[in-house]
Structures are given as C-alpha cells and as structure tokens.
Length: 191
Image (cartoon, rainbow, N blue to C red):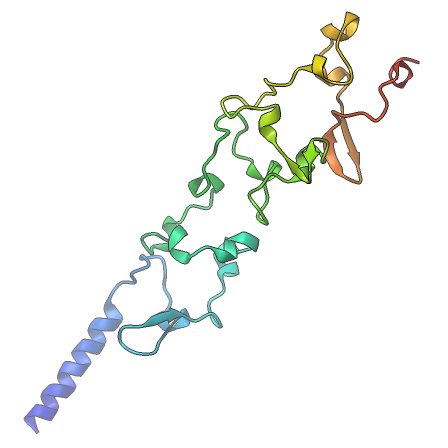
C-alpha cells in the first residue's frame, strides 16, 4: 500500500512539474503543446498540421516559403526571434543602393527578378540579366552606353536628362519606365 501511495504521489509531482515548465518556444507562447504537436512516443514529436496554421502568425507561408524547413527561420525555437525582413534570410547584393523594398523587383514565387521591373524590355529568353546595365556596387545604370543603342545621343539630345524621354507609363504590362521604343522617329517627340 505504501508503494502504491508513493507511486501516485511521485506521478502527481511529475505531472505538476511538467505542466509548470516554461515553453521551449519562449514566454509569449501561452498554448498547450498538443495544439501544435502530436507525440506518438516519448522521443518523437511532430507538428500537427491539422491544428497548426502558420497563416495565424502574421507571416503566412506562401509559395517558396512553404518549402523552407522550420529551423531555417526558427533557429532557437523561440518564435518571436524569427525575423520577417527579406534580408534576414536572403543575401542583399544591392545594399545599400536600392533600399529594403524587395517586392519592387522580387516576389515570393521566385527570388529571380520579375520581368515587370522593366516590363520585359530587357528580357532575353524570358529573363533579365541586370548586370548588363547595373553593378551590385551601385544600382545606377553605370554600364549602359546610349551610343551603343539604336538612338545615339548627339546634339541637344546629349544634354537632356534621361527622364526627358524615358517616362513612366502604365499599360497592360504594369507601371514602368519606358526605355525601349518601337519607333524612334523625330516626329514621335517633335511635332
């Protein structure tokens, strides 16, 4: 009888100790383990994908982010430590020349530059090679030589600012600066 009472007391103390422990995910997480995890035995704990929804965390896993291992973002398992900024995971080759607005050129479907940046004007086989005009040291188009284009800059054209001719347009391709023109006849600009 004494052994049975001791075993029951020990089990109660263990149960109280287990439920009073802080979460390995930090103090801010105030939910029971079984909301997110399933334990088939004492050593295997898996995420319960039926009850855990990453969309409720403020950072929904969309497109390519769905394929990333949890530990890539949650290194120490304290979830609020995971950084939501693109450059916390993705190397920013452009810094500091283009700022932190990665969505301007990239999207979550692929880190490859989306054609809408220049509306496909510089695409070759469906891809834009930014290094044809830009360098990663300065994102300004330092490699572009207008005199190697169809429209050489001479006379009064040589003194114009780029945006005198290359203006923002909005059409079925989106909003972009028009760099390539179908027709470069004088009458297109001079009436």
